[in-house]
Amino acid sequence: MFLSEINLQNFRNYSKLKLKFKKNINIFIGNNAQGKTNILESIYFLSITKSHRTTKENFLIKDNEVMTKVTGKVKNESISKKYEVMLNTNGKRVSINDNPIKKISDYLSNINVVMFCPDDLEIIKGTPHNRRYFLNIEIGQLYNDYLKHIYNYNKILKSRNDYLKNNNYFDKVYFDVLTESLIKENIKIIKYRYNYIELINKYITNIYKDLTKKDNIYLKYETFIDVDEEDIMYKKIKEKYNKSFENELFQKVTLYGAHKDDFSVYIDDIKINNYGSQGQHRIAILSIKLAEVEIFKNIKEVKPILLLDDIFSELDKNKKNNIIKYINNDLQVFITSTDLKNVSRKLLKNADIYKVETAKVVREAK
Image (cartoon, rainbow, N blue to C red; front, side, top):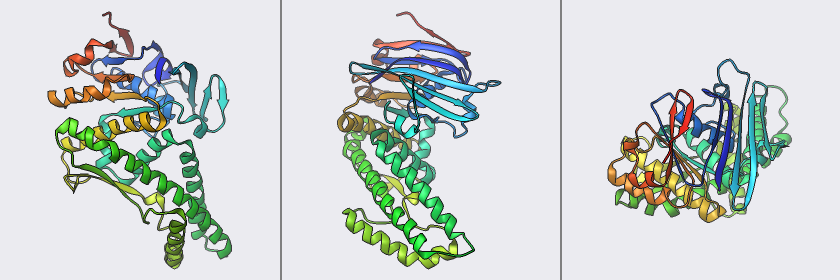
């Protein structure tokens, strides 16, 4: 899978920008605040329909404009498709080959990207919400059904919580119907998340060893129920909700469920989420992202587009060289940096280099 062309209209600091790419390494060089990261963000936005930097989507629209549009052509084997995401104050529209897609969940998982950026450190040291959001985005790229379970779960959870807050007549039969639906969605989501964490653990050990010469790293999924056969999980979750009913009624909120899931990262059997160093967090999250590349290749049989925002500035020479085997393996890679000196010479040999300055992008002649 690779992006052959992208067109930006009123995206961040770009009024109009059209770039064509080959299936190789693309490096954007320039000072800070010139628009390098905006290009990677636009690729992510084309794939995920969200920004990796902000939840306030109106920030993506160029100042004094009312809409933004990102269009791209993506080739997967011999098939080329046109994708488009348009955002304005009324909402978001997506299309494939100029055919509107009604549900964004049906658009997602078509373009697979793996993004690494400085803010990703918050996945490890940030809140459980950050880690659930990470799981939802990444699993959703693999399995379209997962996003539908998340949508259903959130809808049912809201109805259940609203009903718990209801101070008027309480219909226990109706409440039990909501609980029954929530249990079923819990099981699906938990199993997807558990299996995904296990997939990361399958690949992360060797990657982390390549980067650090150490191999004791793993992720631990944390939820309110043991992962087991679905019928066993159903009985245990139902029992959990039955026992907590009076307490939930008193607190007027659903106390248990996938909406409180989390995961921890362990190095040398020590949880590093709150106590690890900046360096440990950086290498751990990079290892997780590179493990995701392997998951796409082996589970979905797709080579994802790899987006690396300012990855090399804080890595030593050995770690830079060890990363090359993962990002120079027939993947399309987009890299930003303030200085070519930060980028390995081995990567520069096969790279297309773009100079970015005040929202102008010029490809340098080889």
